[in-house]
Length: 234
Length: 301
Image 1 (spheres, chains in turn red, brown):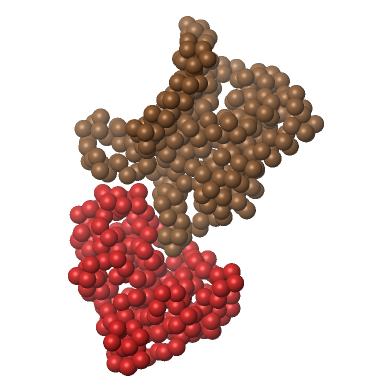
Image 2 (cartoon, each protein chain N blue to C red):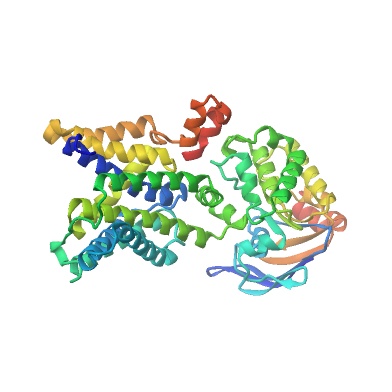
């Protein structure tokens, strides 16, 4: 479904990604794990078009999307939950969700998607009139995810959904991620919490200082002694 | 029909009407889209000179067409300058707009066509409608248009850009396009306001449109409440009328004016009407408190 080949990304003189290749098949949850600054978020940002690729090729459903602007990429069916949630603080929950559907013009579809999001996150329905900045961290994460779902993406890029949340909430969020995936949305997940990520992912890539060092089935990586000592705290 | 009104009061009313058009333009750029501009006076200046020159060179052109042309000219200038500088954010953008406004001033001070430092004397407009009626018709039209834009799909995108550019981009909003459109439309209003100003005063000089003019307009928007249309209207009215009503204090006038601004920012940091909208006020009036205290509060802040 998504194929990233030999991707290089620079931030000024800093090489953020060097020759990274990865792919995501339809229906999968693919996790990107690794330490801070390994380049996980940069891969997501390159796929969604927020960060330009210096070289390499990104293709989605067989068509090249390298260098396409973000609004074009959203229209093609990829949507992103950015790191740190980034909800529109002064806009209401409802307006935030409407923003997620900005690229679509079918009112019926938007309405249907809104109902789906409210079914997935009943808390958001209760607070639909509230400005997003008055929500708790967990609710903001739900809002950011709901907002990304509003465009009915085929591929959802999920960046650090567990960041700054209490362990109980993290579990709840991951449960919902699995639910979203079960309903047919393919997911690419960036996560610091490697054990959680490997528990729900189909496959995973391990990144180190801008390069991909390991890849494989999530269950195999979770059993790998190297991964266990470096990322699972054993 | 305007004969019954004291000419001094009438003059203040016209100035308020013009200030409303100018402030609403800046509110669109800075309040709603969140792009801090310190150069709004530059676009007022381009509009004022364009409008004055049309009246001087082509006296037959109807005044409405003249103002439209002046607004479009300012919008064009804004789009051209906006394309490179709207990639910047916050302080950097503010400095750029400030610098641009100074350039416009210096260029107009040195151009033959704008009559250099002598400025232009502007004949009365080619219109049978009295100036106060004209100004207020345009002011009301602007209020309606801005209220409409703010609640539209386009306005929602602008507010999203204000709240978080990266998230807005990730939602599929074309940042460059929307920022330029907002900047151009805000400057269009500055141009129209400039045209009205030129014809009402009858004389314009490039030095009238300096940094302080931009700050005056920013004051109106901030005092009223960034992003609030009703707030800009109130801010423009108060700040235009206050120096007149404080005249009896002679030299202490600006002191009190300054103190008023300080007090306001201490007690209402979000502006007088921060978070209040015309539609919200109407709903409360009709007893439809649906948007509640919480729903409205976050909006304009």
